[in-house]
Length: 44
Image 1 (cartoon, rainbow, N blue to C red):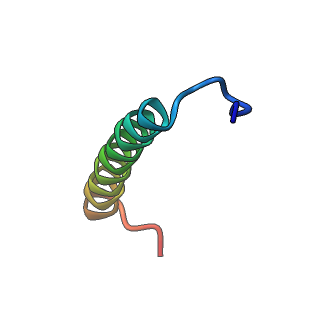
Image 2: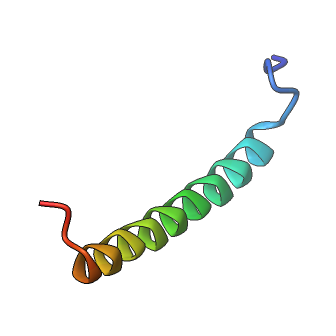
């Protein structure tokens, strides 16, 4: 069965794994940045 993306199941799993780890890394960096800015100048 052909997928819409053209990826095999193994390729899709590898892509998903890389995507999720990149997203979690971005989430951590943004949370730390928000915390540091809030420590410097609270907005509430």
